[in-house]
Length: 115
Image 1 (spheres, rainbow, N blue to C red):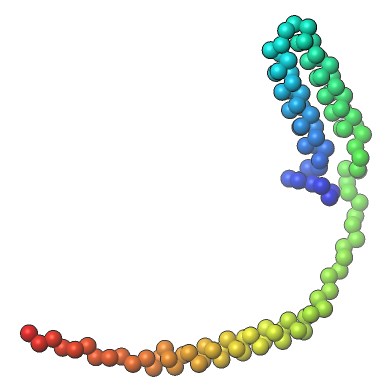
Image 2: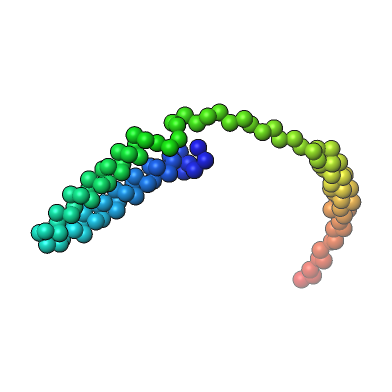
């Protein structure tokens, strides 16, 4: 089901569009004069005919044919783990380099105010 949106195919959207256009044309023609109002009947019949054709003669079967799944092979598997190990070692080295600066930070005494 290649063109599925929200789990339905394009035919459902096409049927909805046909009936929305039919409704709008019916509303517009209902305000017209008496002989023009009669055009609503063929428009509704045309929309009904197209809807029935789309429902009873679908292009694709209801159940899609099983698709052979492609097997994804990671060819950069070893390189990715080597890169991860190098980055991990660099992170740990930077962490242990900055740790003494945090732990051995000098604490200065505050001056005592004389009153």
